[in-house]
Amino acid sequence: KAGVTQTPRYLIKTRGQQVTLSCSPISGHRSVSWYQQTPGQGLQFLFEYFSETQRNKGNFPGRFSGRQFSNSRSEMNVSTLELGDSALYLCASSPETGSVGETQYFGPGTRLLVL
Amino acid sequence: LAKTTQPISMDSYEGQEVNITCSHNNIATNDYITWYQQFPSQGPRFIIQGYKTKVTNEVASLFIPADRKSSTLSLPRVSLSDTAVYDCLVQAGRRALTFGSGTRLQVQP
Image (cartoon, rainbow over all chains, first blue to last red; front, top):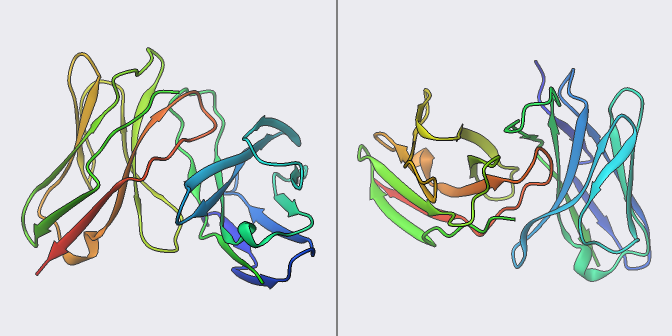
Protein backbone atom coordinates (compact mmCIF):
# COMPACT_ATOMS: atom_id res chain seq x y z
CA LYS A 1 0.00 0.00 0.00
CA ALA A 2 1.42 3.39 -0.91
CA GLY A 3 2.08 5.79 1.93
CA VAL A 4 0.93 9.35 2.36
CA THR A 5 2.13 11.52 -0.50
CA GLN A 6 2.55 15.26 -0.53
CA THR A 7 3.18 17.65 -3.39
CA PRO A 8 5.19 19.64 -4.03
CA ARG A 9 8.11 18.56 -1.87
CA TYR A 10 9.79 21.96 -2.00
CA LEU A 11 8.44 25.42 -2.64
CA ILE A 12 9.84 28.94 -2.63
CA LYS A 13 7.48 31.90 -2.41
CA THR A 14 7.73 35.57 -1.58
CA ARG A 15 5.92 37.52 1.11
CA GLY A 16 2.34 38.36 0.27
CA GLN A 17 1.87 35.46 -2.13
CA GLN A 18 -0.38 32.52 -1.48
CA VAL A 19 0.38 28.82 -1.68
CA THR A 20 -1.56 25.58 -1.99
CA LEU A 21 -0.19 22.28 -0.75
CA SER A 22 -1.63 18.89 -1.61
CA CYS A 23 -1.88 15.64 0.32
CA SER A 24 -3.03 12.19 -0.77
CA PRO A 25 -3.74 9.91 2.19
CA ILE A 26 -3.11 6.20 2.37
CA SER A 27 -5.77 4.38 0.37
CA GLY A 28 -8.80 3.77 2.56
CA HIS A 29 -7.87 6.38 5.14
CA ARG A 30 -10.58 8.94 5.69
CA SER A 31 -9.05 11.37 8.16
CA VAL A 32 -6.37 13.86 7.12
CA SER A 33 -4.54 16.16 9.50
CA TRP A 34 -2.09 18.95 8.76
CA TYR A 35 0.85 20.04 10.91
CA GLN A 36 3.45 22.76 10.72
CA GLN A 37 6.98 22.02 11.85
CA THR A 38 9.54 24.72 12.59
CA PRO A 39 12.83 24.46 14.48
CA GLY A 40 11.62 26.84 17.16
CA GLN A 41 8.06 25.61 17.71
CA GLY A 42 8.33 21.95 16.87
CA LEU A 43 5.34 20.16 15.37
CA GLN A 44 2.09 22.09 15.69
CA PHE A 45 -1.38 20.96 14.71
CA LEU A 46 -3.15 23.01 12.03
CA PHE A 47 -6.43 21.22 11.32
CA GLU A 48 -8.06 17.89 10.64
CA TYR A 49 -10.56 16.87 7.99
CA PHE A 50 -12.94 13.98 7.82
CA SER A 51 -15.62 13.39 5.20
CA GLU A 52 -14.88 16.75 3.58
CA THR A 53 -15.53 18.59 6.85
CA GLN A 54 -13.09 20.32 9.14
CA ARG A 55 -13.47 18.50 12.40
CA ASN A 56 -10.73 20.02 14.52
CA LYS A 57 -8.63 23.16 14.31
CA GLY A 58 -5.42 24.35 15.94
CA ASN A 59 -4.45 27.88 16.93
CA PHE A 60 -3.43 29.33 13.59
CA PRO A 61 -4.68 32.53 11.95
CA GLY A 62 -7.38 32.51 9.29
CA ARG A 63 -4.73 32.81 6.58
CA PHE A 64 -4.35 29.07 6.96
CA SER A 65 -7.20 27.10 5.47
CA GLY A 66 -7.83 23.71 4.03
CA ARG A 67 -10.31 21.43 2.42
CA GLN A 68 -10.89 17.78 1.73
CA PHE A 69 -12.32 16.22 -1.38
CA SER A 70 -14.66 13.28 -1.73
CA ASN A 71 -11.71 10.94 -2.43
CA SER A 72 -10.16 12.03 0.90
CA ARG A 73 -7.38 13.99 -0.78
CA SER A 74 -6.75 17.25 0.99
CA GLU A 75 -5.29 20.64 0.25
CA MET A 76 -4.16 23.40 2.53
CA ASN A 77 -3.82 27.02 1.52
CA VAL A 78 -1.85 29.80 3.09
CA SER A 79 -2.68 33.31 1.91
CA THR A 80 -0.65 36.49 2.31
CA LEU A 81 2.50 34.59 3.16
CA GLU A 82 4.78 35.88 5.91
CA LEU A 83 8.43 35.08 6.53
CA GLY A 84 7.42 33.14 9.64
CA ASP A 85 5.39 30.74 7.51
CA SER A 86 8.62 29.13 6.32
CA ALA A 87 8.36 25.59 7.64
CA LEU A 88 7.92 21.93 6.89
CA TYR A 89 4.21 21.22 6.38
CA LEU A 90 3.24 17.67 7.18
CA CYS A 91 0.13 15.77 6.33
CA ALA A 92 -0.97 12.70 8.26
CA SER A 93 -3.77 10.24 7.59
CA SER A 94 -5.54 7.69 9.73
CA PRO A 95 -8.11 5.02 8.93
CA GLU A 96 -10.73 6.47 11.29
CA THR A 97 -12.16 3.13 12.30
CA GLY A 98 -13.30 4.55 15.61
CA SER A 99 -10.43 3.25 17.72
CA VAL A 100 -9.38 5.77 20.36
CA GLY A 101 -5.70 5.00 20.01
CA GLU A 102 -5.68 5.12 16.25
CA THR A 103 -2.31 5.85 14.68
CA GLN A 104 -1.61 8.70 12.30
CA TYR A 105 0.77 8.06 9.40
CA PHE A 106 2.79 10.99 8.16
CA GLY A 107 3.85 11.98 4.68
CA PRO A 108 7.31 13.30 3.75
CA GLY A 109 6.20 16.91 4.02
CA THR A 110 6.39 20.02 1.87
CA ARG A 111 9.19 22.40 2.72
CA LEU A 112 8.06 25.97 2.17
CA LEU A 113 10.52 28.84 2.11
CA VAL A 114 9.14 32.36 2.14
CA LEU A 115 11.53 35.09 1.02
CA LEU B 1 -4.00 17.92 27.13
CA ALA B 2 -1.57 15.77 29.10
CA LYS B 3 1.95 17.22 29.02
CA THR B 4 4.92 14.97 28.48
CA THR B 5 8.46 15.33 29.76
CA GLN B 6 11.41 13.44 28.34
CA PRO B 7 15.18 13.91 28.34
CA ILE B 8 16.48 16.37 25.80
CA SER B 9 19.22 14.06 24.56
CA MET B 10 20.86 10.68 25.06
CA ASP B 11 24.03 9.07 23.77
CA SER B 12 24.65 5.40 23.11
CA TYR B 13 26.88 3.03 21.19
CA GLU B 14 26.04 0.56 18.49
CA GLY B 15 24.73 -2.74 19.82
CA GLN B 16 23.56 -1.35 23.14
CA GLU B 17 20.01 -1.29 24.43
CA VAL B 18 18.56 2.20 24.82
CA ASN B 19 15.75 3.07 27.21
CA ILE B 20 14.02 6.45 26.92
CA THR B 21 11.58 7.37 29.68
CA CYS B 22 8.72 9.80 29.27
CA SER B 23 6.69 11.30 32.12
CA HIS B 24 3.00 12.06 31.65
CA ASN B 25 1.58 12.71 35.10
CA ASN B 26 -1.77 14.05 33.88
CA ILE B 27 -2.62 11.22 31.52
CA ALA B 28 -6.35 10.68 31.17
CA THR B 29 -8.18 7.38 31.31
CA ASN B 30 -8.80 7.23 27.57
CA ASP B 31 -5.34 8.37 26.51
CA TYR B 32 -2.95 6.09 24.67
CA ILE B 33 0.83 6.48 24.69
CA THR B 34 2.47 6.62 21.28
CA TRP B 35 6.11 6.94 20.29
CA TYR B 36 7.33 8.34 16.99
CA GLN B 37 10.77 8.52 15.43
CA GLN B 38 11.77 11.55 13.43
CA PHE B 39 14.75 12.21 11.18
CA PRO B 40 15.75 15.74 10.13
CA SER B 41 13.41 17.27 7.55
CA GLN B 42 11.15 14.22 7.50
CA GLY B 43 7.74 13.44 8.90
CA PRO B 44 7.40 11.41 12.13
CA ARG B 45 7.39 7.65 11.76
CA PHE B 46 5.20 5.57 14.08
CA ILE B 47 7.20 3.22 16.32
CA ILE B 48 4.89 1.75 18.94
CA GLN B 49 1.74 2.44 20.92
CA GLY B 50 0.38 1.12 24.19
CA TYR B 51 -2.20 1.66 26.89
CA LYS B 52 -0.82 -0.29 29.85
CA THR B 53 1.71 -3.01 30.78
CA LYS B 54 4.08 -4.02 28.02
CA VAL B 55 3.86 -3.92 24.25
CA THR B 56 6.46 -5.34 21.88
CA ASN B 57 6.82 -5.20 18.12
CA GLU B 58 9.63 -5.91 15.69
CA VAL B 59 11.21 -2.52 16.32
CA ALA B 60 10.84 -1.74 20.03
CA SER B 61 9.21 -2.48 23.37
CA LEU B 62 7.08 -0.14 25.43
CA PHE B 63 6.82 -0.51 29.19
CA ILE B 64 3.98 1.22 31.02
CA PRO B 65 3.62 0.92 34.81
CA ALA B 66 0.26 0.41 36.46
CA ASP B 67 -0.23 4.10 37.29
CA ARG B 68 0.50 5.04 33.64
CA LYS B 69 2.22 8.23 34.73
CA SER B 70 5.31 7.32 32.74
CA SER B 71 6.39 5.04 29.93
CA THR B 72 9.72 3.68 28.72
CA LEU B 73 10.62 3.05 25.11
CA SER B 74 13.22 0.32 24.77
CA LEU B 75 15.28 -0.01 21.59
CA PRO B 76 17.29 -3.26 21.54
CA ARG B 77 20.76 -3.26 19.98
CA VAL B 78 20.71 0.19 18.40
CA SER B 79 22.59 0.96 15.21
CA LEU B 80 23.87 4.19 13.69
CA SER B 81 20.65 4.49 11.69
CA ASP B 82 18.69 4.78 14.94
CA THR B 83 20.16 8.24 15.48
CA ALA B 84 17.03 10.39 15.47
CA VAL B 85 14.59 12.31 17.64
CA TYR B 86 12.12 10.17 19.57
CA ASP B 87 8.81 11.74 20.51
CA CYS B 88 6.51 10.52 23.26
CA LEU B 89 2.88 11.48 22.76
CA VAL B 90 -0.15 11.07 24.94
CA GLN B 91 -2.97 10.85 22.48
CA ALA B 92 -5.87 13.03 23.57
CA GLY B 93 -8.58 11.62 21.42
CA ARG B 94 -8.05 10.35 17.91
CA ARG B 95 -7.06 13.49 16.14
CA ALA B 96 -4.69 16.30 17.06
CA LEU B 97 -1.31 15.05 18.14
CA THR B 98 0.71 17.26 20.47
CA PHE B 99 4.43 16.78 19.99
CA GLY B 100 7.01 17.93 22.50
CA SER B 101 10.63 18.60 21.67
CA GLY B 102 11.46 14.91 21.91
CA THR B 103 14.66 13.11 22.88
CA ARG B 104 17.59 13.38 20.53
CA LEU B 105 19.35 10.01 20.46
CA GLN B 106 22.90 9.94 19.15
CA VAL B 107 24.34 6.50 18.43
CA GLN B 108 28.11 6.31 18.18
CA PRO B 109 30.08 3.55 16.41
